[in-house]
Image (spheres, rainbow, N blue to C red):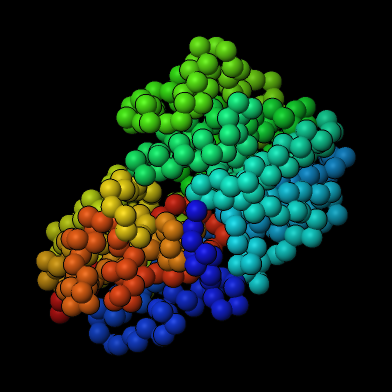
Length: 473
Protein backbone atom coordinates (compact mmCIF):
# COMPACT_ATOMS: atom_id res chain seq x y z
CA UNK A 1 0.00 0.00 0.00
CA UNK A 2 1.37 3.48 -0.77
CA UNK A 3 3.02 5.20 2.17
CA UNK A 4 1.25 8.14 3.84
CA UNK A 5 3.44 10.51 1.82
CA UNK A 6 2.20 9.03 -1.46
CA UNK A 7 -1.18 10.72 -1.05
CA UNK A 8 0.32 14.16 -0.45
CA UNK A 9 -0.26 16.17 -3.62
CA UNK A 10 0.37 19.71 -2.38
CA UNK A 11 0.18 21.75 0.80
CA UNK A 12 -3.59 22.00 0.33
CA UNK A 13 -3.89 18.25 -0.17
CA UNK A 14 -5.09 18.61 -3.76
CA UNK A 15 -3.47 17.53 -6.99
CA UNK A 16 -1.32 20.40 -8.22
CA UNK A 17 0.23 20.04 -11.62
CA UNK A 18 2.72 22.83 -10.92
CA UNK A 19 4.44 20.37 -8.57
CA UNK A 20 6.03 18.88 -11.66
CA UNK A 21 8.69 21.59 -11.50
CA UNK A 22 9.26 21.45 -7.76
CA UNK A 23 11.53 19.20 -5.73
CA UNK A 24 11.78 18.95 -1.95
CA UNK A 25 9.77 22.14 -1.51
CA UNK A 26 12.17 24.27 -3.56
CA UNK A 27 11.75 25.48 -7.11
CA UNK A 28 13.93 23.61 -9.59
CA UNK A 29 16.03 26.32 -11.23
CA UNK A 30 15.76 26.09 -15.01
CA UNK A 31 18.61 27.55 -17.03
CA UNK A 32 18.62 28.23 -20.73
CA UNK A 33 20.88 25.27 -21.55
CA UNK A 34 19.63 22.69 -24.09
CA UNK A 35 19.68 20.05 -21.34
CA UNK A 36 17.44 22.08 -19.06
CA UNK A 37 15.06 22.79 -21.92
CA UNK A 38 14.75 19.07 -22.57
CA UNK A 39 13.94 18.38 -18.91
CA UNK A 40 11.29 21.11 -18.89
CA UNK A 41 9.80 19.67 -22.06
CA UNK A 42 9.74 16.16 -20.56
CA UNK A 43 7.60 17.38 -17.70
CA UNK A 44 5.28 19.32 -19.99
CA UNK A 45 4.74 16.30 -22.23
CA UNK A 46 4.02 14.05 -19.27
CA UNK A 47 1.59 16.60 -17.86
CA UNK A 48 -0.25 16.74 -21.20
CA UNK A 49 -0.47 12.95 -21.31
CA UNK A 50 -1.82 12.55 -17.78
CA UNK A 51 -4.29 15.41 -18.03
CA UNK A 52 -5.83 13.98 -21.18
CA UNK A 53 -6.77 10.74 -19.42
CA UNK A 54 -8.40 12.30 -16.36
CA UNK A 55 -12.12 11.65 -16.06
CA UNK A 56 -13.47 15.08 -17.09
CA UNK A 57 -11.50 14.87 -20.34
CA UNK A 58 -12.28 11.22 -21.03
CA UNK A 59 -16.00 11.20 -20.33
CA UNK A 60 -16.65 14.53 -22.03
CA UNK A 61 -15.70 12.73 -25.26
CA UNK A 62 -17.76 9.62 -24.49
CA UNK A 63 -21.39 9.95 -25.65
CA UNK A 64 -23.77 9.12 -22.75
CA UNK A 65 -26.00 7.25 -25.21
CA UNK A 66 -23.23 4.62 -25.43
CA UNK A 67 -22.89 4.15 -21.68
CA UNK A 68 -25.53 1.44 -21.35
CA UNK A 69 -27.76 -0.93 -23.34
CA UNK A 70 -30.43 1.82 -23.52
CA UNK A 71 -30.52 5.57 -22.97
CA UNK A 72 -30.19 6.42 -19.24
CA UNK A 73 -33.63 8.08 -19.13
CA UNK A 74 -35.23 4.80 -20.29
CA UNK A 75 -34.84 3.29 -16.81
CA UNK A 76 -36.85 3.55 -13.60
CA UNK A 77 -33.66 4.43 -11.73
CA UNK A 78 -29.95 4.75 -12.39
CA UNK A 79 -27.42 3.65 -9.81
CA UNK A 80 -23.67 4.10 -10.10
CA UNK A 81 -20.82 2.21 -8.53
CA UNK A 82 -17.12 2.11 -9.16
CA UNK A 83 -13.77 0.83 -8.09
CA UNK A 84 -10.31 2.10 -8.89
CA UNK A 85 -8.17 5.20 -9.02
CA UNK A 86 -10.46 7.04 -11.46
CA UNK A 87 -13.76 6.03 -9.83
CA UNK A 88 -14.38 9.13 -7.72
CA UNK A 89 -13.70 11.55 -10.57
CA UNK A 90 -15.76 9.46 -13.00
CA UNK A 91 -18.67 9.47 -10.55
CA UNK A 92 -18.57 13.26 -10.38
CA UNK A 93 -18.75 13.53 -14.16
CA UNK A 94 -21.59 10.98 -14.37
CA UNK A 95 -23.65 12.85 -11.78
CA UNK A 96 -23.10 16.12 -13.63
CA UNK A 97 -24.38 14.48 -16.82
CA UNK A 98 -27.35 12.60 -15.34
CA UNK A 99 -28.47 15.04 -12.64
CA UNK A 100 -31.45 13.88 -10.60
CA UNK A 101 -31.82 10.75 -12.74
CA UNK A 102 -28.99 9.30 -10.64
CA UNK A 103 -30.54 7.69 -7.56
CA UNK A 104 -27.48 6.74 -5.53
CA UNK A 105 -24.11 5.08 -5.70
CA UNK A 106 -20.91 3.91 -4.07
CA UNK A 107 -17.26 4.00 -5.17
CA UNK A 108 -14.21 2.38 -3.62
CA UNK A 109 -10.99 4.37 -3.97
CA UNK A 110 -7.49 4.22 -2.47
CA UNK A 111 -7.04 5.42 1.08
CA UNK A 112 -6.41 9.16 1.16
CA UNK A 113 -7.80 9.83 -2.32
CA UNK A 114 -10.76 11.99 -1.26
CA UNK A 115 -8.35 14.42 0.42
CA UNK A 116 -6.45 14.83 -2.86
CA UNK A 117 -9.49 15.37 -5.07
CA UNK A 118 -8.79 18.24 -7.49
CA UNK A 119 -10.79 21.40 -6.80
CA UNK A 120 -11.65 21.80 -10.47
CA UNK A 121 -13.22 18.33 -10.82
CA UNK A 122 -17.02 17.87 -10.55
CA UNK A 123 -18.15 16.60 -7.15
CA UNK A 124 -20.77 13.91 -6.59
CA UNK A 125 -23.38 14.54 -3.91
CA UNK A 126 -25.22 11.19 -3.92
CA UNK A 127 -22.34 8.72 -4.21
CA UNK A 128 -20.87 7.26 -1.04
CA UNK A 129 -17.09 6.84 -0.89
CA UNK A 130 -15.32 3.90 0.73
CA UNK A 131 -11.54 3.96 1.07
CA UNK A 132 -9.74 0.67 0.49
CA UNK A 133 -6.17 -0.54 0.26
CA UNK A 134 -3.87 -0.64 -2.75
CA UNK A 135 -1.84 -2.53 -3.88
CA UNK A 136 -2.72 -4.79 -0.95
CA UNK A 137 -6.36 -4.99 0.19
CA UNK A 138 -7.48 -3.86 3.64
CA UNK A 139 -10.63 -4.20 5.70
CA UNK A 140 -11.77 -1.08 3.87
CA UNK A 141 -11.49 -3.06 0.63
CA UNK A 142 -13.68 -5.78 2.14
CA UNK A 143 -16.28 -3.23 3.29
CA UNK A 144 -16.26 -1.61 -0.13
CA UNK A 145 -16.70 -4.91 -1.97
CA UNK A 146 -19.63 -5.84 0.27
CA UNK A 147 -21.28 -2.49 -0.45
CA UNK A 148 -20.86 -2.98 -4.19
CA UNK A 149 -22.38 -6.45 -4.13
CA UNK A 150 -25.26 -5.30 -1.92
CA UNK A 151 -25.99 -2.42 -4.27
CA UNK A 152 -25.81 -4.69 -7.31
CA UNK A 153 -28.23 -7.13 -5.70
CA UNK A 154 -30.64 -4.28 -4.84
CA UNK A 155 -30.75 -2.97 -8.41
CA UNK A 156 -34.14 -3.72 -9.94
CA UNK A 157 -34.87 -5.40 -13.26
CA UNK A 158 -35.99 -2.07 -14.75
CA UNK A 159 -33.00 -0.14 -13.38
CA UNK A 160 -29.59 0.66 -14.82
CA UNK A 161 -26.39 -0.03 -12.94
CA UNK A 162 -23.50 2.10 -14.21
CA UNK A 163 -20.15 0.62 -13.20
CA UNK A 164 -17.02 2.79 -13.33
CA UNK A 165 -13.96 0.57 -13.67
CA UNK A 166 -10.32 1.62 -13.49
CA UNK A 167 -6.90 0.48 -12.40
CA UNK A 168 -6.49 -0.59 -8.80
CA UNK A 169 -10.04 -1.90 -8.66
CA UNK A 170 -9.09 -5.49 -7.86
CA UNK A 171 -7.34 -4.76 -4.56
CA UNK A 172 -9.78 -2.00 -3.66
CA UNK A 173 -12.86 -4.23 -3.99
CA UNK A 174 -11.56 -7.44 -2.47
CA UNK A 175 -14.07 -9.71 -0.76
CA UNK A 176 -12.45 -13.09 -0.06
CA UNK A 177 -14.25 -16.27 -1.09
CA UNK A 178 -16.26 -17.78 1.76
CA UNK A 179 -13.49 -20.20 2.79
CA UNK A 180 -10.65 -17.67 2.72
CA UNK A 181 -9.48 -14.85 4.97
CA UNK A 182 -8.04 -11.45 4.12
CA UNK A 183 -4.67 -12.30 5.67
CA UNK A 184 -4.22 -15.22 3.29
CA UNK A 185 -5.17 -13.08 0.31
CA UNK A 186 -2.77 -10.31 1.29
CA UNK A 187 0.03 -12.82 1.57
CA UNK A 188 -0.47 -14.33 -1.88
CA UNK A 189 -0.98 -10.87 -3.43
CA UNK A 190 2.31 -9.73 -1.88
CA UNK A 191 4.09 -12.85 -3.11
CA UNK A 192 2.93 -12.26 -6.66
CA UNK A 193 3.83 -8.57 -6.56
CA UNK A 194 7.37 -9.13 -5.32
CA UNK A 195 7.89 -11.96 -7.83
CA UNK A 196 7.09 -9.59 -10.71
CA UNK A 197 4.03 -11.54 -11.89
CA UNK A 198 2.33 -9.61 -14.70
CA UNK A 199 -1.17 -8.25 -14.20
CA UNK A 200 -2.83 -10.73 -16.59
CA UNK A 201 -1.57 -13.69 -14.59
CA UNK A 202 -2.06 -11.98 -11.25
CA UNK A 203 -5.70 -11.21 -11.95
CA UNK A 204 -6.31 -14.76 -13.17
CA UNK A 205 -5.45 -15.82 -9.64
CA UNK A 206 -7.26 -13.00 -7.85
CA UNK A 207 -10.53 -13.53 -9.76
CA UNK A 208 -10.69 -17.07 -8.40
CA UNK A 209 -10.05 -16.08 -4.78
CA UNK A 210 -12.60 -13.27 -4.49
CA UNK A 211 -16.28 -12.44 -5.18
CA UNK A 212 -16.38 -9.29 -7.35
CA UNK A 213 -14.04 -9.83 -10.30
CA UNK A 214 -14.38 -12.24 -13.17
CA UNK A 215 -17.91 -11.12 -14.06
CA UNK A 216 -19.27 -11.84 -10.59
CA UNK A 217 -20.54 -8.28 -10.12
CA UNK A 218 -22.61 -8.54 -13.31
CA UNK A 219 -24.01 -11.84 -12.07
CA UNK A 220 -25.04 -10.19 -8.79
CA UNK A 221 -26.80 -7.37 -10.67
CA UNK A 222 -28.83 -9.61 -13.02
CA UNK A 223 -31.45 -9.18 -14.38
CA UNK A 224 -30.78 -5.43 -14.31
CA UNK A 225 -29.06 -3.76 -17.25
CA UNK A 226 -25.40 -3.03 -16.57
CA UNK A 227 -23.27 -0.47 -18.38
CA UNK A 228 -19.57 -0.29 -17.57
CA UNK A 229 -17.22 2.56 -18.43
CA UNK A 230 -13.68 1.23 -18.34
CA UNK A 231 -10.35 3.08 -18.11
CA UNK A 232 -7.63 0.62 -19.06
CA UNK A 233 -4.46 0.09 -17.06
CA UNK A 234 -3.37 -3.12 -18.79
CA UNK A 235 -1.34 -3.81 -21.91
CA UNK A 236 -3.70 -4.88 -24.69
CA UNK A 237 -6.78 -3.35 -22.99
CA UNK A 238 -8.36 -6.73 -22.22
CA UNK A 239 -11.42 -5.69 -20.22
CA UNK A 240 -11.54 -9.07 -18.49
CA UNK A 241 -8.22 -8.12 -16.86
CA UNK A 242 -8.83 -4.46 -15.96
CA UNK A 243 -9.79 -4.42 -12.25
CA UNK A 244 -10.28 -8.18 -12.81
CA UNK A 245 -13.24 -7.58 -15.11
CA UNK A 246 -16.17 -7.30 -12.66
CA UNK A 247 -18.71 -7.01 -15.48
CA UNK A 248 -16.89 -8.96 -18.20
CA UNK A 249 -17.09 -12.68 -19.05
CA UNK A 250 -14.13 -14.50 -17.54
CA UNK A 251 -12.17 -16.65 -20.01
CA UNK A 252 -9.94 -18.06 -17.23
CA UNK A 253 -10.51 -20.98 -14.88
CA UNK A 254 -9.44 -22.28 -11.49
CA UNK A 255 -6.99 -24.54 -13.32
CA UNK A 256 -5.46 -21.49 -15.01
CA UNK A 257 -5.05 -19.78 -11.64
CA UNK A 258 -3.43 -22.86 -10.16
CA UNK A 259 -1.02 -23.08 -13.10
CA UNK A 260 0.02 -19.44 -12.69
CA UNK A 261 1.21 -20.12 -9.15
CA UNK A 262 2.93 -23.33 -10.25
CA UNK A 263 4.59 -21.59 -13.18
CA UNK A 264 5.88 -18.76 -11.00
CA UNK A 265 7.31 -21.18 -8.44
CA UNK A 266 4.94 -19.88 -5.76
CA UNK A 267 2.55 -22.81 -5.31
CA UNK A 268 4.26 -24.40 -2.33
CA UNK A 269 4.78 -21.03 -0.62
CA UNK A 270 1.24 -19.67 -0.72
CA UNK A 271 -1.01 -20.25 2.31
CA UNK A 272 -2.56 -23.73 2.53
CA UNK A 273 -6.17 -22.40 2.36
CA UNK A 274 -5.34 -20.80 -1.00
CA UNK A 275 -4.02 -24.09 -2.37
CA UNK A 276 -7.07 -25.97 -1.08
CA UNK A 277 -9.49 -23.42 -2.55
CA UNK A 278 -7.92 -23.46 -6.01
CA UNK A 279 -7.59 -27.24 -6.04
CA UNK A 280 -11.26 -27.64 -5.11
CA UNK A 281 -12.21 -25.28 -7.91
CA UNK A 282 -10.02 -27.01 -10.47
CA UNK A 283 -11.60 -30.34 -9.52
CA UNK A 284 -15.13 -29.00 -9.96
CA UNK A 285 -16.06 -28.68 -6.30
CA UNK A 286 -16.58 -24.91 -6.63
CA UNK A 287 -18.57 -23.02 -9.26
CA UNK A 288 -16.52 -21.26 -11.91
CA UNK A 289 -16.67 -17.52 -12.48
CA UNK A 290 -19.28 -16.68 -15.18
CA UNK A 291 -17.97 -17.25 -18.69
CA UNK A 292 -18.98 -15.92 -22.12
CA UNK A 293 -22.20 -17.97 -22.23
CA UNK A 294 -23.54 -16.76 -18.87
CA UNK A 295 -27.00 -15.19 -19.13
CA UNK A 296 -26.07 -12.19 -16.98
CA UNK A 297 -24.01 -10.72 -19.83
CA UNK A 298 -27.00 -10.48 -22.17
CA UNK A 299 -27.90 -7.18 -20.46
CA UNK A 300 -24.34 -5.89 -20.04
CA UNK A 301 -22.29 -3.46 -22.13
CA UNK A 302 -18.65 -2.58 -21.54
CA UNK A 303 -17.23 0.61 -23.06
CA UNK A 304 -13.53 1.42 -23.17
CA UNK A 305 -13.32 5.10 -22.18
CA UNK A 306 -9.56 5.62 -22.06
CA UNK A 307 -6.30 3.81 -22.71
CA UNK A 308 -2.55 4.33 -22.72
CA UNK A 309 -2.85 5.26 -26.38
CA UNK A 310 -5.05 8.20 -25.39
CA UNK A 311 -2.24 9.52 -23.19
CA UNK A 312 0.45 8.94 -25.81
CA UNK A 313 -1.65 10.75 -28.42
CA UNK A 314 -1.73 13.80 -26.15
CA UNK A 315 2.01 13.63 -25.53
CA UNK A 316 2.64 13.33 -29.26
CA UNK A 317 0.49 16.37 -29.99
CA UNK A 318 2.35 18.40 -27.36
CA UNK A 319 5.76 17.26 -28.63
CA UNK A 320 4.90 18.12 -32.22
CA UNK A 321 3.80 21.58 -31.11
CA UNK A 322 7.24 22.04 -29.54
CA UNK A 323 9.00 21.18 -32.77
CA UNK A 324 10.02 17.58 -32.09
CA UNK A 325 9.93 14.81 -34.63
CA UNK A 326 7.94 12.13 -32.82
CA UNK A 327 8.68 8.42 -32.97
CA UNK A 328 5.94 6.29 -31.43
CA UNK A 329 7.64 3.04 -30.48
CA UNK A 330 5.16 0.95 -28.48
CA UNK A 331 2.23 1.13 -26.09
CA UNK A 332 2.77 -2.44 -24.93
CA UNK A 333 6.02 -2.18 -22.99
CA UNK A 334 6.48 -4.98 -20.47
CA UNK A 335 9.46 -6.75 -18.94
CA UNK A 336 11.98 -6.05 -16.18
CA UNK A 337 11.98 -2.31 -15.44
CA UNK A 338 15.73 -1.74 -15.29
CA UNK A 339 16.25 -3.54 -18.62
CA UNK A 340 13.43 -1.58 -20.22
CA UNK A 341 15.10 1.70 -19.23
CA UNK A 342 18.46 0.61 -20.60
CA UNK A 343 16.87 -0.49 -23.87
CA UNK A 344 15.03 2.82 -24.26
CA UNK A 345 18.27 4.74 -23.72
CA UNK A 346 20.06 2.58 -26.29
CA UNK A 347 17.39 3.39 -28.87
CA UNK A 348 17.98 7.09 -28.22
CA UNK A 349 21.79 6.78 -28.33
CA UNK A 350 21.85 4.72 -31.51
CA UNK A 351 19.52 7.01 -33.45
CA UNK A 352 21.76 10.10 -33.80
CA UNK A 353 18.82 12.09 -35.21
CA UNK A 354 19.50 15.21 -37.30
CA UNK A 355 16.59 17.11 -35.73
CA UNK A 356 15.11 17.37 -32.21
CA UNK A 357 13.43 14.02 -31.67
CA UNK A 358 10.94 12.60 -29.17
CA UNK A 359 10.41 8.90 -28.51
CA UNK A 360 7.22 7.73 -26.84
CA UNK A 361 6.59 4.40 -25.18
CA UNK A 362 3.72 3.19 -23.01
CA UNK A 363 3.00 0.11 -20.96
CA UNK A 364 3.79 -1.32 -17.56
CA UNK A 365 7.11 -2.99 -16.79
CA UNK A 366 7.52 -5.01 -13.62
CA UNK A 367 10.16 -5.22 -10.91
CA UNK A 368 11.45 -8.46 -9.49
CA UNK A 369 12.20 -7.35 -5.94
CA UNK A 370 15.44 -8.78 -4.59
CA UNK A 371 16.53 -5.89 -2.37
CA UNK A 372 14.94 -4.05 0.53
CA UNK A 373 15.20 -0.53 -0.84
CA UNK A 374 12.56 2.08 -1.64
CA UNK A 375 11.34 2.86 -5.13
CA UNK A 376 8.91 1.98 -7.89
CA UNK A 377 8.96 0.58 -11.38
CA UNK A 378 9.16 3.99 -13.06
CA UNK A 379 12.05 5.10 -10.89
CA UNK A 380 13.79 1.82 -11.69
CA UNK A 381 13.18 2.33 -15.42
CA UNK A 382 14.70 5.81 -15.14
CA UNK A 383 17.73 4.53 -13.21
CA UNK A 384 18.34 1.85 -15.83
CA UNK A 385 18.20 4.57 -18.47
CA UNK A 386 20.51 6.85 -16.47
CA UNK A 387 23.33 4.31 -16.50
CA UNK A 388 23.01 3.83 -20.26
CA UNK A 389 22.78 7.57 -20.96
CA UNK A 390 26.25 8.14 -19.50
CA UNK A 391 27.54 7.33 -23.00
CA UNK A 392 25.47 10.06 -24.67
CA UNK A 393 27.31 12.58 -26.83
CA UNK A 394 24.27 14.78 -27.47
CA UNK A 395 21.85 16.57 -25.17
CA UNK A 396 19.45 13.85 -24.05
CA UNK A 397 16.78 13.38 -21.41
CA UNK A 398 14.45 10.56 -20.44
CA UNK A 399 11.40 10.38 -18.15
CA UNK A 400 9.37 7.47 -16.86
CA UNK A 401 6.15 8.26 -15.02
CA UNK A 402 2.98 6.54 -13.85
CA UNK A 403 -0.14 8.29 -15.07
CA UNK A 404 -1.74 7.65 -11.68
CA UNK A 405 0.87 9.86 -10.03
CA UNK A 406 2.01 7.09 -7.69
CA UNK A 407 5.06 4.91 -8.27
CA UNK A 408 5.38 2.13 -5.72
CA UNK A 409 5.23 3.00 -2.01
CA UNK A 410 6.57 6.52 -2.61
CA UNK A 411 5.34 10.08 -3.03
CA UNK A 412 6.65 10.25 -6.60
CA UNK A 413 5.12 9.41 -9.97
CA UNK A 414 8.51 8.47 -11.40
CA UNK A 415 11.81 10.14 -12.26
CA UNK A 416 13.87 11.55 -15.10
CA UNK A 417 17.43 10.95 -16.24
CA UNK A 418 20.05 12.86 -18.20
CA UNK A 419 23.61 11.98 -19.26
CA UNK A 420 25.01 13.45 -16.03
CA UNK A 421 22.50 11.77 -13.68
CA UNK A 422 24.77 8.88 -12.70
CA UNK A 423 27.75 11.19 -12.14
CA UNK A 424 25.67 13.57 -10.01
CA UNK A 425 24.36 10.64 -7.99
CA UNK A 426 27.89 9.41 -7.26
CA UNK A 427 28.87 12.93 -6.19
CA UNK A 428 25.93 12.82 -3.77
CA UNK A 429 27.17 9.54 -2.31
CA UNK A 430 24.75 7.28 -4.20
CA UNK A 431 26.27 4.62 -6.44
CA UNK A 432 23.69 3.94 -9.20
CA UNK A 433 24.57 0.27 -9.69
CA UNK A 434 24.34 -0.43 -5.96
CA UNK A 435 21.01 1.35 -5.66
CA UNK A 436 19.67 -0.51 -8.68
CA UNK A 437 20.59 -3.89 -7.23
CA UNK A 438 18.93 -2.97 -3.93
CA UNK A 439 15.73 -1.76 -5.64
CA UNK A 440 16.55 1.55 -3.96
CA UNK A 441 16.02 4.11 -6.72
CA UNK A 442 13.98 6.61 -4.71
CA UNK A 443 16.76 7.84 -2.35
CA UNK A 444 19.11 8.32 -5.30
CA UNK A 445 16.73 10.45 -7.34
CA UNK A 446 15.61 12.30 -4.22
CA UNK A 447 19.23 13.19 -3.41
CA UNK A 448 19.75 14.83 -6.81
CA UNK A 449 16.29 16.38 -7.21
CA UNK A 450 15.13 14.28 -10.15
CA UNK A 451 11.92 12.76 -8.81
CA UNK A 452 8.72 13.44 -10.73
CA UNK A 453 6.08 14.48 -8.20
CA UNK A 454 2.49 15.16 -9.28
CA UNK A 455 0.32 13.83 -6.47
CA UNK A 456 -2.52 11.39 -7.25
CA UNK A 457 -4.01 12.21 -10.65
CA UNK A 458 -7.28 10.29 -10.14
CA UNK A 459 -6.72 8.24 -13.27
CA UNK A 460 -4.54 5.34 -14.40
CA UNK A 461 -3.60 4.21 -17.90
CA UNK A 462 -0.27 2.63 -16.95
CA UNK A 463 3.03 4.40 -17.61
CA UNK A 464 4.41 6.88 -20.10
CA UNK A 465 8.08 6.83 -21.07
CA UNK A 466 9.48 9.83 -22.95
CA UNK A 467 12.91 10.26 -24.52
CA UNK A 468 14.18 13.53 -25.98
CA UNK A 469 17.36 14.19 -27.98
CA UNK A 470 18.64 17.56 -29.17
CA UNK A 471 21.37 17.12 -31.81
CA UNK A 472 24.60 19.05 -31.40
CA UNK A 473 24.84 22.25 -33.38
